[in-house]
Length: 155
Image (cartoon, rainbow, N blue to C red; front, side, top):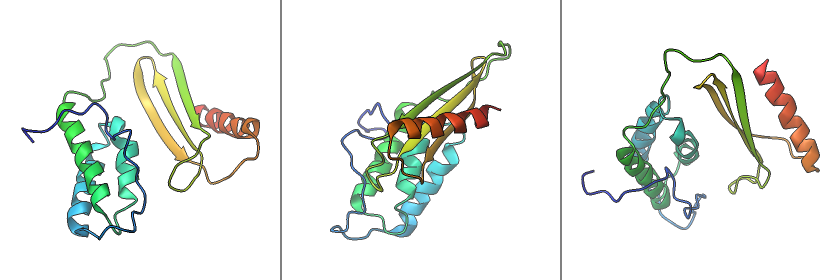
């Protein structure tokens, strides 16, 4: 990994993951080993959770495009080895939460996704990403559902 091109994001903005039925299947055991290694790392690297879980969806029949994305994640980890979670000893006890909802849906199965993170003082205590099963007809209805679930999580 010494001669790796520097990357700034865990997944390329131009990469498009899908079933890729036209390509031939690759070695499943090797791909699963790569995914297992990345799944081990997500406990301390929440910045790669989304892309690792996205790549894990294709473990049954990996293609060359999927392996390329996994290799991109490894390059990102090589370049950002000093990143991780940090919890200071002394901090205030104020609770702050942030939320983001993607109403344009996932490009693979066209479902809506939402992300949330909660801070206690300056320390991240919970980060969650959820793909919703329900489809809503109105944006305001979707926002109401998200706000209700956020309040439940905070309580």
